[in-house]
Image (cartoon, rainbow, N blue to C red; front, side, top):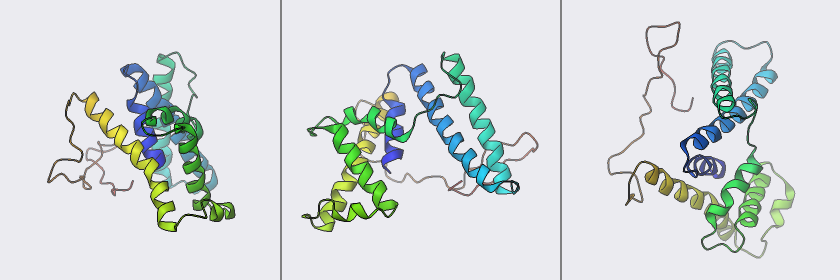
Length: 192
């Protein structure tokens, strides 16, 4: 959640729409590089789902490269997680003594816990586990709130609601645009 919220905030922060596109292309290149690493691990078994992932990865990379070159950037420009968090930390300055340190501490602790690093067991040992969990979730929540505010500002809403409108639900049955080889849209599972 921290990285997802940070990505949204990173994309929405600049006033200049070209800079927002350039940032999106940097994130897309990182996504394409991560997917390519997975595909390299899969090796020759690039059929079915992996074949589709390979096609989508190539399309994503091509689109990102086009945007980056048009903006005068290297076609391989991307942003890693640490630089992404550094870029958005100042937006959290409200109420935090040192936003960058706070974001990085929480990121490292949650990442360490997710990767079963033993040093995370002793962090904030004087706190009850529930307090530690609340502190960990405070950062992605703050990032998501700032991203929500910016999203509503970008779409022209002066008084954005705190939550999506009543009755709003995600469309998990949405279809992707038709493939070049098909006249019909391809049904995708919601997590794809």
